[in-house]
Length: 125
Image 1 (cartoon, rainbow, N blue to C red):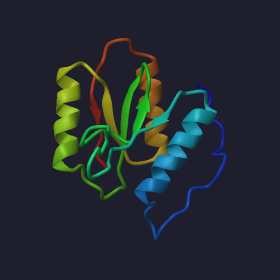
Image 2 (image 1 turned 90 degrees about the vertical axis):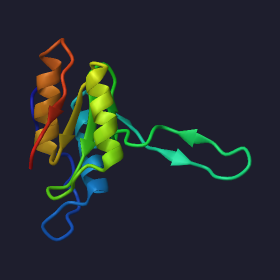
Image 3 (image 1 turned 180 degrees about the horizontal axis):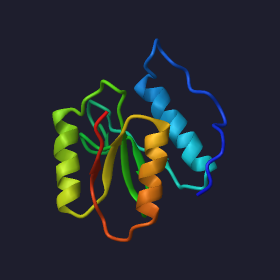
Image 4 (image 1 turned 90 degrees about the horizontal axis):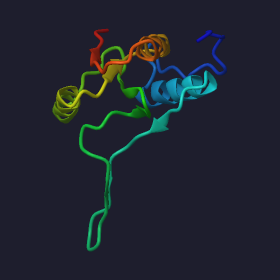
């Protein structure tokens, strides 16, 4: 994968990029680089006949055939439901990585593209 300059600069709040903007910039750039990225989300419609989509703790981005990316800001920590989801995924042989920057997301994807066996990658800050 050949890296090119970012197509758009993400909006920055103070010194930290908001998690939503980080996820959006990762999704946009990985898609531009030819990676299939699906934005994931959990939603519940309450009331009679309500629906449920996704699972509590499910990561932000699904990369079919590669794994899942959970986006966090530099100071963000995973919720207990996210830690549990990631642990279950690891037990099932599904890759999950917490990424805190676009560059880190690209590195994880490059690693996953070069490896066939599932693994879980958890990054510090």
